[in-house]
Image (cartoon, rainbow, N blue to C red; front, side, top):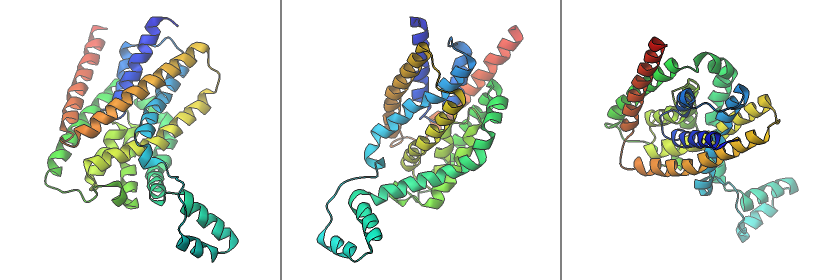
Length: 300
């Protein structure tokens, strides 16, 4: 593989790492970037690469938020706890001892909320994923989604100025709220919508703070993207050439590093600013996309 192909993969990794977490649509940007940067690979592998590269972005979330996500620890039991457990039947005592000693119950509850939020995507979006990819992966759909949700971000932020969030930390996030955010995630199956944008908008509308909406969006991405990558892996198989393995490794590493920077930027940004700037960015980009492809079709 020559240096030009490596540079292409690096650029795609940078685009993925930035756009996966900012509410501007990673899928939409990857489709648009593909218009100008063509990897010298088969169409099947390119489809696989564009999904699996997201695992690098997911690993950044795991690393940055490990303390909030890892649900196990090792702590000694107090005498009162041991006494209470000894009164239980053997099986119950074994289970409860494991839970009390090794399980962080608050983090397990958070993971259950994440899984509840995944239900709408599994039930509604997953069965139609291939059809949507076939019918809607085009510049017009991407451009319309960019503009529509850009306007929506601005309108919602103006509306949100008059409200105070009722959920300001993840511990207070209810299962109902998590499920409602999951419903908004279903909207992101349309290219150009943005998974993070959909869930952040949903979180704000159902009463969470921007910080809670953003963090829960990051966490919700873990099972969703691992699931999507697994499906692509099953579909594509495990037969890779040496060049394809190198492409995957470079893309994953670049997406991981850039994602860490993007997540840190976003979490710092939203402490002092709203999401309107991303709304305006989406609108401008959507107009430019339509203009470019109209001009291309006229000239072609």
